[in-house]
Amino acid sequence: MLLLALAFTVAFVLLLYMVSPLISPKALKLAGAHVVVTGGSSGIGKCIAIECLKQGAFITLVARDENKLLRAKKEIEKNAINDKQVVLCISVDVSKDYGQVENVIKQAQEKLGPVDMLVNCAGFAVSGKFEDVDIDCFGKLMEVNYLGSVYPSRAVIHTMKERRMGRIVFVSSQAGQVGLFGYTAYSPTKFAVRGLAEALQMEVKPYNIYVTVAYPPDTDTPGFQEENKSKPLETQLISETSNVCQAEHVARVIVKDATQGNFNSSIGSDGYMLSSLTCGMSPVTSITEVLQQVITMGLFRIIALFYLGSFDSIVRRCMIQREKSEHENKSK
Ligand SMILES: NC(=O)C1=CN([C@@H]2O[C@H](COP(=O)(O)OP(=O)(O)OC[C@H]3O[C@@H](n4cnc5c(N)ncnc54)[C@H](OP(=O)(O)O)[C@@H]3O)[C@@H](O)[C@H]2O)C=CC1
Ligand SMILES: CCCCCCCCCCCCCCCC(=O)[C@@H](N)CO
Image: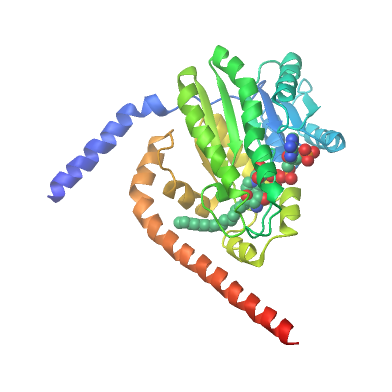
């Protein structure tokens, strides 16, 4: 029996190695490539732009605030490795009007050539209890985080298919892999991005276009500082499970996974466990990845139950605490 199991495993591993050339994309070299980064004027997006410039790319930054764009451009340009490299800035709201976004991509392609890699990083987070979050926020978040990823991707896809090459990166979040207290408005927008990425990847793979979804943990950025101003205690305590990452590190991992053509990009050990646990029917881009998923999934599910238990107990404790202090206030 044991021998049979062993034989099966060996056969399985051999089979995987045989099909490996089919699933391993060729790495994209960033030297001379044109990379468009939405949300490139701040935080993770800015660091992604810097990382790409360091590898010799030409960059287009897309965001709304022109002053912030110009300031970021100056900072990013310092990392150029040759004097031919250009950092172009274009101001647009990626979530409002598809025509506008299409125009921006056209302008960028006229100046710097066809887009080799698009990084959809524009986005924001709002946390709060379901009944406390402003009702308009649900739509606004979906517009910016989801439609704001659809529009730029739609605007580059035709040329990428014609050229039979390209990379599209979506910046989701760990909150796009698990729904947590306080993220009823934000999480669904990041889950949506994954659905888009999976469906799109199946369409464009024969055209040699590779899609990457990144799931960063809490990362120290201006956006994160903003989010923290109104974060419920429960969300804070749950989030403390994971360390806060530096944007430079997150950016390096994302750029590496995107150039290699990996579908999944995760950061840190929690990120690794979450990605393995939630891989579902997502495309596979390396043999090691499949093997790791197959071997670790059951174990990670058990570990996840402990995390869930501790999150539930945080939520319960906070509720009791709140009711207690409300009671005390009333009786004062
Ligand atoms: N920081 C974190 O903890 C994590 C962040 N993420 C995700 O990473 C992405 C970047 O986050 P982070 O770096 O923290 O955010 P920042 O707030 O620091 O940067 C956001 C960038 O997006 C731009 N932007 C926002 N809305 C729009 C819009 N409607 N149209 C065009 N550009 C827009 C901003 O410029 P402007 O305002 O001028 O338009 C800015 O350049 C987001 O999608 C976020 O959800 C994921 C996991 C963790
Ligand atoms: C085996 C299973 C392991 C499970 C570990 C779970 C750890 C959960 C911590 C999640 C923190 C939430 C990140 C949201 C980041 C974000 O998108 C916002 N900060 C954006 O501003």
